[in-house]
Image (cartoon, rainbow, N blue to C red; front, side):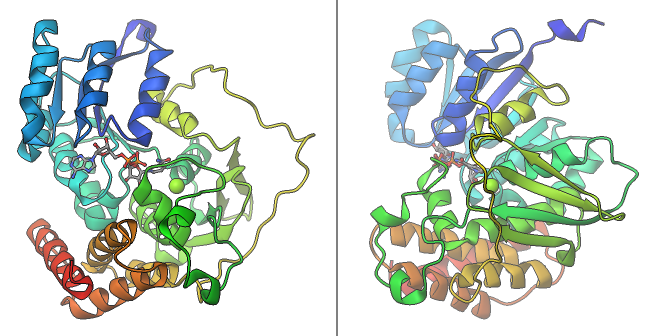
Length: 389
Ligand code: NAD
Ligand code: MG
């Protein structure tokens, strides 16, 4: 069989976001390799329609049901099917019309469709790290049962995944997750107490959706990524180390039993890990700018300041204790970031909300999927009450 001629049929869940739009950029320049079959958006009907008219998918889903008629009217003459509402995401996730789901919805909202897709044997290119933070054990177990590959899109995990190619028989001593440190690297609490949302939304190296940009400023993003790494690579908490690397050229590293360290490097551009995940196991040629060692001569590394960026300490605690604690932490963080983005709480109050929620929701050591759903709801309610949302 000539594999060159097989076109992968892609479903992009969260196509209007930062990852979704960059994935469409990758697909647009590789029409011989990928076809877009499914696009989904929460609110942005205009962009969804524009994308659908350009990429001609089999179907689209608009989350906001009030926008159904508008989307339908714009696409019906093109023969593109239109669905609406939260439940539709799960229904579409099990359809036969696609091969690989790019999970690019932000937050807990992406979990159910991903689980459905895995149960139905679909390969997953995973950007939506919160799914693994919430229910990583169940998700990875289902993936193994259904022989479904979960290919990371997150740049650090893509780096680790790439370092591990050809190393299946070799034990990992540890993984080193690099972190840019975000816009407030080197700052102390007396500075952070006054930072506003506009300031926190300025990330030095990456342009991303608002939630992950705030998570990067608080270092919660790196905390979520430690838990993500645990499940993706089957690691013990003590095998996961975080190091600050402000230039974001080394995307992460793996240290093996002999002390040898492999790093994956490149300019920071999410299109690279997106393209790798979509095309895996192949690499595709592209015209993106290359990193030139002769031009930039310094790469710096330092230990993260967990006393100032306490979210990373809270996430390490959740990683160590496990059970439903990462799920609870994630829910409280989603509420806290939502409130911060609406100027309802301050930068440092986000950490207080997360910490109090983690202390108050009852711990479950071996949660079922239902337990995770319940813990998520309880934690959201508790955090929202604290903020008086
Ligand atoms: P974004 O906010 O730009 O886009 C989110 C997408 O999800 C949009 O298409 C939106 O319509 C959809 N969405 C939002 N809420 C939804 C809901 N309740 N139900 C259904 N759909 C919903 O986010 P992003 O930056 O593209 O991030 C997406 C995911 O990828 C996140 O989990 C993030 O942590 C991860 N990620 C992003 C980057 C990045 O560079 N942006 C890097 C690594 C990982
Ligand atoms: Mg990342």
